Image 1: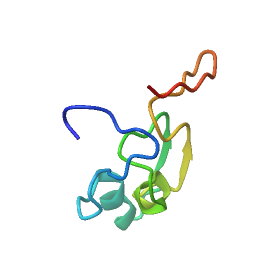
Image 2: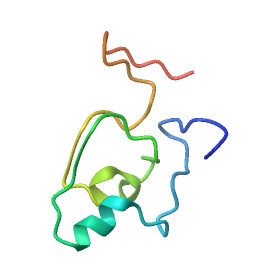
Image 3: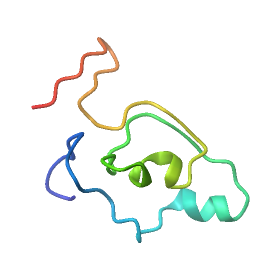
Image 4: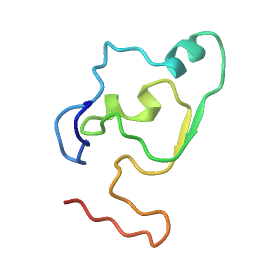
Length: 75
């Protein structure tokens, strides 16, 4: 994951056994929300923000969406 980008249908993402900060905070009773692009994988629901410690997500799951003109071009 260090030398490229994840495309929408690409079958990989941050491994599920890698715990991220929101998951730790959720265990401590914090309410976690994310706004923006999610670049850690989205090919299965378990890789998306709501399954990685966030209660809500406003944004896109991949990096090919433009917030200015709302275009979505994946090269």
